[in-house]
Amino acid sequence: MSRYSLATLARHAWRSNAHWPEALPERPLKPSYDAVIVGAGGHGLAAAWYLASQHGMTNIAVVDKGWLGGGNVARNTTIVRSNYFHPARRAMTNRALELWRGLSQELNYNVMFSPRGIINLAHSSSQMDDLARRGNAMMVDGVGAELLSVEDIRRRVPILDTDPQARHPIVGGMVQHEAGTARHDAVAWGYARAAMALGVDIFQNCEVTGIETREGRVESVNTGRGRIATPRLALCAAGGTSHLARMVGLTMPLENHLLQACVTEPVKPVLDCIVTHGVHNFYISQTDKGELVLGGDIDGYNNATSVGDPRTFEEIARVCLSLFPGFEQLRVMRTWGGVVDMSMDGSPILSHTSIDGLYVNAGWCYGGFKATPAAGEVLAAMIATDTTPSLAAEFGLDRFTTGAVVSEEGHGPRPWMYH
Amino acid sequence: MLRIPCPFCGERDYTEFAFWGDASFPRPADPQELSDSEWSEHLFHRDNPAGQYLEYWHHALGCRGWFIIQRDTRTHLISPVCRGGEGRS
Ligand SMILES: Cc1cc2nc3c(=O)[nH]c(=O)nc-3n(C[C@H](O)[C@H](O)[C@H](O)COP(=O)(O)OP(=O)(O)OC[C@H]3O[C@@H](n4cnc5c(N)ncnc54)[C@H](O)[C@@H]3O)c2cc1C
Ligand SMILES: [Zn+2]
Image 1 (cartoon, rainbow over the protein chains, first blue to last red):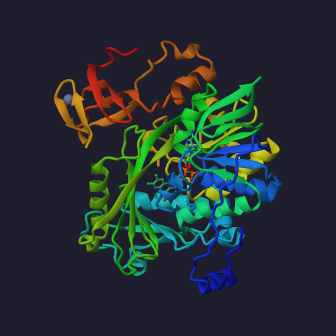
Image 2 (image 1 turned 45 degrees about the vertical axis):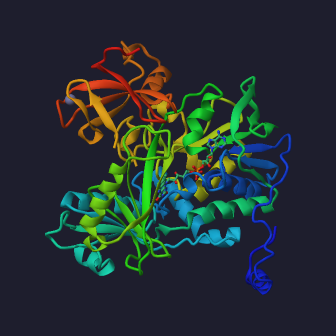
Image 3 (image 1 turned 30 degrees about the vertical axis):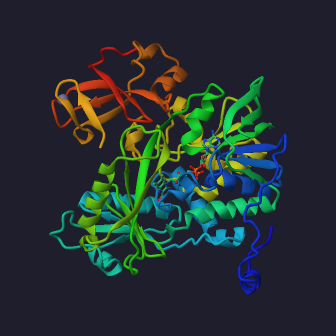
């Protein structure tokens, strides 16, 4: 697999760009692998890359029922941040931030990580107190956070309506400067290419239809392209997790819900950071192409499809215009949805299971993109060593039995209320 | 927009209702008697089907009645409704 460089760019340009090799060449499926990963989303592909690059395990396959980047990895609103209150959530996403910074170089693929900062707005003094508490918790761990006055915000984001008469008057906010965005489909392609270059096999259109176990151990998986024998199997299937777990008789603490997003037509640069609302769940950023990317809440009732309710958009648009009245004339260009695997405490599951050799990485709700490099790295270590890496210690399935749930928001077992 | 047939008021936009989750299993009669893993099963583990799903709705901005409907999570087609906890398996 050829490396991308200025020299290859020049060489191909010279030959009219007509001779680029296939980015992801198709290889034959082997009858057995040392490990199989289900799901060629960000997490599955990252796990494959770190298995190969950090643990020397290259005889592995990643299988996906759809196409590369067809899942949530390329449906998300690309927000990368680590401004969590819960220490375990913060540690995981912070490790990811460290990896994000060098990811383009590491993978030889431009993932366009752009640490442009995220501003959480506050609309009341108690929200300011809450942000201060969260910011303090972050700073204890060495994660930068800064409280902002309305004046600071006005200077930083002049297009925001900071008028005291606004629909939701802004009283201040908090910024994490190191947060940002990345080009999500490039993350899938970058990890896939880099892993393949080290010998990992990736199969698209290859659905897992059955999992065979013997004496409590994983033995093989059945796929649309035939049976693959493997002693280690990792589920990185987001909305497909419950279905896959059922194949071995496990029920998961997960529910599938639908999250939608949309982009407007492209405009000149107006917003150079991410802004989130303090009352409604709303987040916005601007892509390098100029489109504004808007997101909000999940639809609010279980959904097994990626087709959502138009009412969510009404709400997104209404909240957007309350903050940015200047966007009133913008047209929405595209909307889409993704099935998100909402966990029962709103936190991810990165865990061994009661079946030897079966690992689960799921329940990332609508916040798994930011964690992609760290989730992959931690899962790779778990698969390679069959131990629990310290970053995953609090994300085991057993927490739902011991009661040690990791609940950033504390809504109880109501997955549709988490974020 | 999803329309929810309230057994007391008729069909309304779902924005009038509060969704209250999986109704496919009853609350254990005597939680004290359950082991930790049985309680965890009840509290946290879900079938999460792509298909027929029994769910609680609360007509929060209407009559404030509670009821259960059966909805297909792939098509959102809703089957006849029952009041309160009636008709639950
Ligand atoms: C609209 C939207 C906005 C979001 N915004 C953000 C955000 O701003 N920041 C953030 O951090 N996170 C965000 N997320 C969440 C984030 O996208 C996910 O948590 C994350 O992508 C999940 O991990 P993944 O990339 O591995 O999943 P996916 O890309 O969904 O990968 C799972 C793969 O498993 C495959 N699969 C499923 N079942 C099977 C089977 N039986 N056999 C074979 N393959 C199977 C699927 O085809 C899929 O490709 C958002 C999600 C959505 C939908
Ligand atoms: Zn009613």
